[in-house]
Image (cartoon, rainbow, N blue to C red):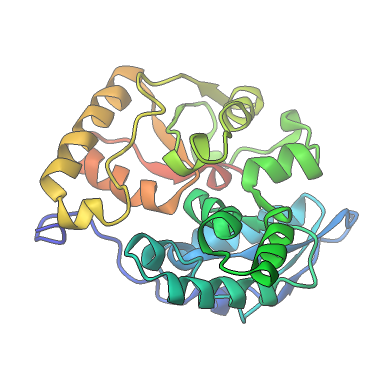
Length: 275
């Protein structure tokens, strides 16, 4: 039932993300290279929201990042670990740690992925060697807003809002893996408040789960819809024109929720707001 007819499910992207962006994306002419970063795509931005992933890469380049996209990376491991397959989880973790061994910063545009990458040490380390490698890897991982405010120290007033979003009223949904696991709350709100051309409004229950919750939305879709309906009430009450978040899983769930509840707001990744 979780994948039944009538549900808003994204189609596979016509081209995978690795077909849209090169292994190395350098800053455009006139922009100084400030950081060398490894980009972790995650399955959703690789296979479903590839254009959004490509925009994220190009946005980071515009901010002075030399963005490397190692082809040897794989799934972060969240689906298999939450299903109880820790052995495969370790194989994926080892693969990813090795793929990003040459980078001091690993950036992900998916809150669930960045959370899992930081959890390798806690969840999967079964010996001293893995514990040491996973601990070092954890220190490299950033979610989008951690990178923007921490490593890049961006001036939010200089962010250029895409024409289709200029003058729009936007609201923020807190992904559970961002606000609870990574304690990232104020940074995305600051971006939305300070970027010229946007009006930020807080939705009621912004930090409440959207109902995605990994496989919950597949195996317990009725419960997932009930949780989503509460979120829809918050979106409607906010009066926002656009719903913004930083998790492709939440985007998938929220888009389904918006349509089911007869709302019109587009749901987008936070970096998709900007040129």
